[in-house]
Image 1 (cartoon, rainbow, N blue to C red):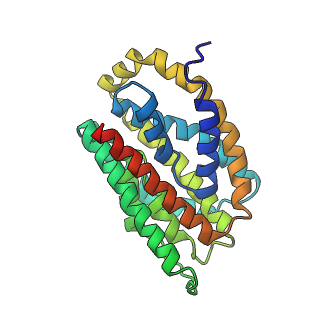
Image 2 (cartoon, rainbow, N blue to C red):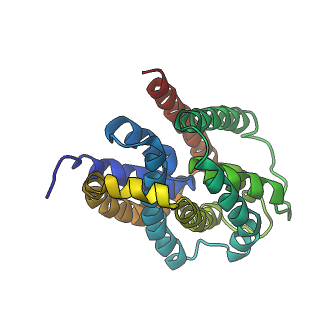
Length: 259
């Protein structure tokens, strides 16, 4: 067994736990990790981040279903606009320059992380009004961004679900987001599989297999731990933590572009 990428096992567990306990895609963390440590084409890295997230979120889906923290009404409603938009974004990604994709990725999570931090701090003591609205437009935009840069869906749809009248506990928001992200990750990964891209995967198969040997079991284990954490999490602190994490990741991404 090639032990070159052994360190991805502990890193993978941490990433999976963070993803499952916050409801944001593991691609937010895997893209910078792979960019810094894996020597393959950035477009393959985005796909590899999607594949990794599929295993991690798949494990999280099983755990959330088991502990009944999935609101299937919310899942169905947001998948309607998100899935076709994910297909469109994934098809477009094959024609966009790899450096542009990295820049879009870093810019998106920096802007959103900053916005979420400001909102979380300024409105932490305000009474949140319950609503029954499904933000279809956000679901479509989020799905498109997911297809384009392998992330963005959870960050856009989660805020709209927090105070929905059908949500009984914050853990249902995260549990539902995990299912939605899992399904759209599969759609995005499959849509990118054109003949040229597949040939690139075959060419780099040795490296990819060496990485996945350590990554897959780590995210499966982490996917079981994360949903347990969110059941007792403080919503305000969780949002602040998410925002700071996204800002930090964006700094890593831009440093990679400037290197």
